[in-house]
Every structure is written in structure tokens, then in C-alpha cells.
Image (tube, rainbow, N blue to C red; front, side, top):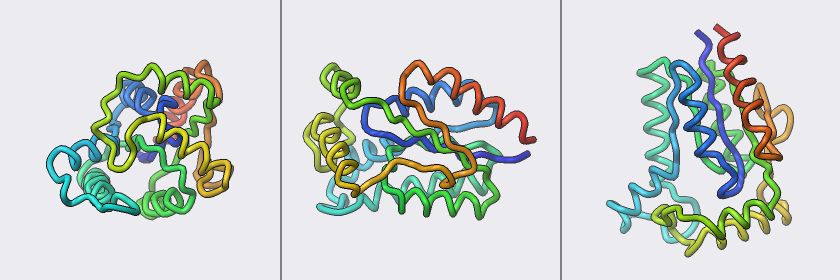
Amino acid sequence: MKRFIIMTVGKTHSGKTTFSKALEQQLKNAIVIDQDNHAEFVNSYYRSLRPLQGPNTIKYAITKTIVDYTIQNTNYHIILSNSNLDRRGRAELLHDFHENNFESVLVHFDIPDYILEERVRKSQRSQSIFRTASSFKEVLDRQIAELRNGNIMGPKEGEANHLFIISDPQDIPSVMQSIVILTSDMK
């Protein structure tokens, strides 16, 4: 059986986690690995080990351990739910999966900023994942600025074996169905 890495990419509140959980229910043999869970774990139990600046290396180490375990000890498709708007970081992750014979799928949530701003404004989501930000609005504002400045970039054609772009929430069911068909066709 061909295994898939399905990586969701997008700004905060774009629907990555909701999509990932729904896709997990539709795919046979799939697991969601969500970095927000790892950030919350670190913030709850190992706050003093968090880096004060730069990448959250302890969160990434936990994610890598779980991903490596899943690759080596299961036959699951992996749905990796994270923003990963850094092209270099995405490329490194995808390279590791390709080395392990995974077929890669990027799902880019390119939802308009005004929708995300409204979602953030109404959000009841726990802020326990934050390391440096004080609100989801701050996170969204930073992501918008970094994208505009070219410091981070959304996916482009050729980064993965398959790329789906969701620019309207109404696109979600058809993209999800395409991925279900894709994974069932690749046995």
C-alpha cells in the first residue's frame, strides 16, 4: 500500500485542524499529527524548556518523534496539521517523507484575510499553544505581514506530488473527496 503525507498549510484559523480531523474520519488507516497539541503539552508541562526566541525546537522534536514512530511502526497515512508557511521547513519535511516512500499532498488554505480576521475575532479557542504571542490576532497579523514581506511563502506547484488550494471554505468538500479518491487509487 502506498502511504501518504497530507500536510495542511495556512494561516491561523484557516481551517487546517478541522479539515484534518474530518479527513482522518474519511480515510482508512490515517492519523492526524497536530503540532498545536505538542505546543500545548510543552506549555503545560515543560514551560521552562521553551526557547525564548527563534524556533520552538522542543515542540518540533516532539513532533519529529511522533512522526518517526508513525513512519517506522505503523502503516498509517499521516495528516500533518500545522501552518508551515516557511518553504524551507516544508521542503525539509517533505524530503524526509519522500525518502520514506510517501506520496505527498499539500493542502494550502489560502482563505481571504477578512474571513480569518472575523474568525479570530469570534474565536473561543484556547490560547494555551502560545509561546510568544498574546492573541490569535497577533499571530494572524504577523503571518499576514511575513507573507507580504516575502519572509514566508505559501506552497507552489512542484513542492509536493499533489497540491490543493482552498481559497473558499466551500472548496473543502471537493478537495477532501479528491484526496480520499487519490489515496484509494494508489494501493
